[in-house]
View 1 (tube, protein in one colour):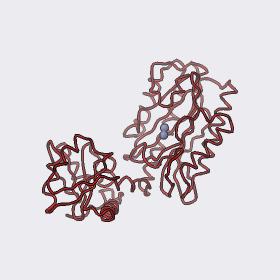
View 2 (cartoon, protein in one colour):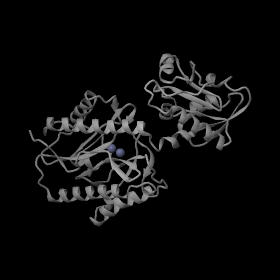
View 3 (cartoon, helix red, strand yellow):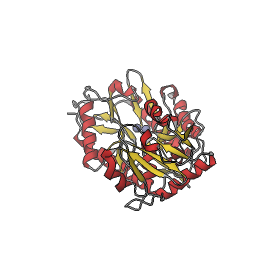
Length: 369
Ligand code: ZN
Ligand code: ZN
């Protein structure tokens, strides 16, 4: 079987990725891998369907999918042999290898139901371990960075267009729907996750779902959302105020959270431990007496998935390297009163940190009706 070449756009470096996975198999004393994770499948083969697995061996590059994707598999994944199965994935694995092989599979990427289908396939000995594709995905290449930049830019344009149309009296749900609509109209192929619009006391719930609460004058509103462009995600948070700012205490909290964000970005550089970046933000909040209200980790990698490696958190063993794209999102949540979170995306570059967001992090104002 031949090695896949670049896709029709000539933009994806798919052969290099396949080569790296084959090398990882050799290094782990394996004959190949079964790749099950949807983002891993897309990264390695270009296939973007909702149901597909890759069988990678020294001379094997097989995309297993179902009849809905017969044509799409050929279009998106030239060079991969597509095998169409109906029912069991096991049918696609049989007869691919002339002799018994040792194949790696990532247990975190396969369901128990799927495992039951493949466990007894003849001539395959399974070895469970972390996906080598996930490791490759940590550092983004130029094409991926372009897509991520486009997703960040689109989200910021949407935010700027959306904000003037908001008025107090609108519900969180309506505000979130309008933001999603604006993103889609500007060209996003989807939202990276369910948009968060949390007003008033609900802002103290870091992952609140938008509900029927109406935005009222004086409310602090946390807006956290992201777009998908070319399969790649963005993720940003801003903290808004309904009406003119009046509250000095909240202004102090906002300044502390923004200071934590800036300190974290300054700590970002190739070779930096992600826990040190998390600590840089936490130290600023600690000086302001707010550290106990920062209840989650500082950030995460972003790429084909909105949450992927590395983790920027207390206790994380991850180390930053050039090409990683991460979020920095300190927040302060005062129970019963509300919250402020500010989230930017940052590319780790040879010089340090390249902030991908361009919008300021000051409180933005929503007009009162
Ligand atoms: Zn976010
Ligand atoms: Zn995030």
